[in-house]
Length: 317
Image 1 (cartoon, rainbow, N blue to C red):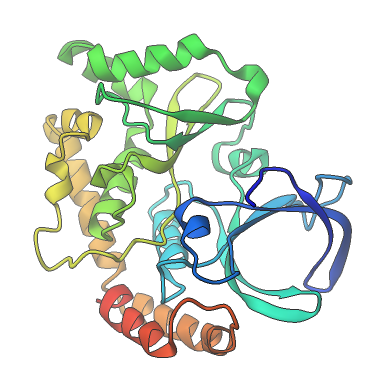
Image 2 (cartoon, rainbow, N blue to C red):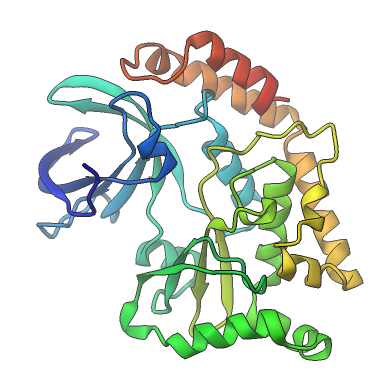
């Protein structure tokens, strides 16, 4: 049974023991449709006691559902970071339950005050997680306030949405850069398009991103969840999502020549990053590093043949 209530467990991280740690299930499709007991997890070290692991109090354990390669999140977030876009840190974790190996997980940093402080040099603004929000599409939106609830003003959020949806062209482009971190937004869209991250805003799904409003109430786009990236045959019509009807904000922005050029520059940057020998070498070295853990995973979703094919045909293209 999935619940947002934390169970109390003892947790050991790299030999460091934490008593009374909180753990719970997380995720949607990766939870509901996982065909083994390997469900995605959220760990909160300070749920019951004041404790942290080198300053980290909360992290996510993604089960790599729909990613036989175990690398889509890792490589995508690395590319975002190299492009200067705020993105959570990620690594691997061999998870043991009562001393027995339970499986290999992707360990992903929680987007919390520590992440905000590192990324924006402040952490007091409201952070929202999207659950189907397309600003400006006039259809629907759903945002969950995740951090700094005391600093949330509903009218400010509604005003931002109305600005995206209803402002005339002169006002839209005059105020745009003071209201939205346009550089991070365009780069994140470019990454999602080029890597075929099908479960994202730019592909019409309108979720898997966060919005952080800083002390000036400027919105910062933070991409999230890349287990479906590298999922599109990029040899054909790679840039189709520009025309999706739901991407009203992106389409409006790209009508301005300077932003269109900025977007295509970002596309080229992603192309260059994924075409280097360093990228190929990193993918292969990572594959060798995790191969044994994947092979011995008692709850893995895919065969080793699928693991190898996914690396060759998807991540390495």
